[in-house]
Image: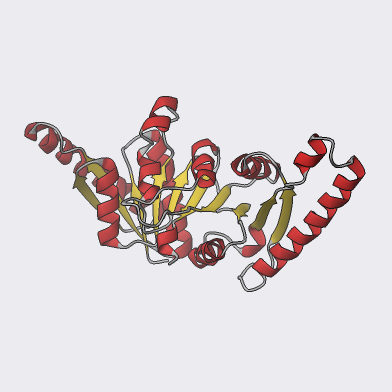
Length: 287
């Protein structure tokens, strides 16, 4: 990894993001680029004052990181909307990773307009790490969710290339459904038949996950297949809690032909509800 961009709004949430980004930079030898966006839809004197203060705060943070972690950091104040500013600057810098602080969990804002983190990830051309938890150590228990698609395979390979964790610390998770379970509920299928059906699906899913993982650099990783008929995002989050994951990796899904790229519903819900860090790898990066 060569370059990490970390966006900060100088909140405690952003402090966690900076700490995690610094930890990754130390581990991988990547350069660190600190960024803050000043909303330019204000009076000129306010923009000027906020810009000057932001530059001072970024420089102080760079000095601190040099003293504590030995990191030489670049810094930048960008004018614009936080979402557009982060995206445009990152596009110009072409980082290997963008690190953001966790979003505010305001229900109405999440439902109607989304958060800066989510909006940034939707249009991203680079992996985005949303930091939710205080970083205590390098990632030791990564849950990588896969639907066994080609896009998911490319996301897994790209995650490996980032060197955020050793493959031995990763669990590949595949969630499968049982369509015939509706027949049991409607009394068209006996319970014993359903049990046999689930066993067959489990074996098929395990074989499919084995074939999916074989060409990927995850020979030492754990592999887990789970049956779940509810929301896939809920299954991912429940499994993350069960295995005590400190990072969840998801591939976002894009819609071709739209002016913006939207997160698929699974990744969207994982990002919205996760209590641990989430790495989203966008489909436009994997084309």
